[in-house]
Length: 286
Ligand SMILES: [Zn+2]
Image 1 (cartoon, rainbow, N blue to C red):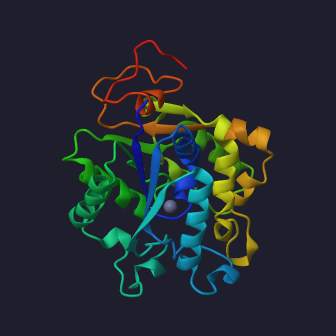
Image 2: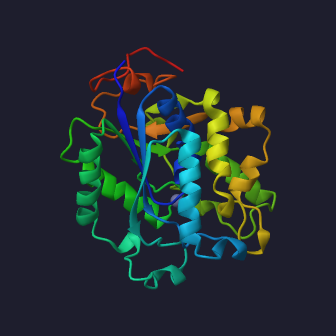
């Protein structure tokens, strides 16, 4: 088996752990070189005041390094853009840095493409078209990565996501039970990816400890102003056997796939065990 290089590009520290951490841990455990690229330091993310001392961004980059260690990643690269955040306050200038959602996609893609070239990337992982739940920085990373791989036909591109329908069902139930405050579930009607469009489901149950450790490294994101619990903290409170069940599979879209066979159970085999671009075998069902 030849050693491949996998470069994962994300908008913020913690994105590498939540949707793709198990896959990255698995790839590094199988001997592949994993490189994490973060577009921003996540300094507009919500957090308790105690974590903002000395700058939230600096703190979050340290957390990213701890997460990288848990996942077995070889290198962390920060592109240095400003976090665009979720609200209007994030439109203000950001210490002389351009906010990610305002940067020129072609220019950023040139930088990211140079990293792919330098690292000799075989596989690139980016964000799905919806930007996950719709954060503007995730959408921007989606655009930048798509553009960056455009002239690299040998690179296999995967976009991390989750199936939209079960997530929507869960948020609608949460809404009916008044668990989500004033959150409107319809805001997520176009979030993530329809199940039918998902091309790869990766079994990461054997790497759940690494995934949990990576998520736990992002301590500043487990609480926010006022100490309100966030989804990361809730996930981490789940016992490991249950966590294996809840987040033991990760989901990807391969947009440049030329055929459309049914998604195989363990599709990353064809990334990690083949030296060339290949499609999963027909007939492999989950
Ligand atoms: Zn993010």
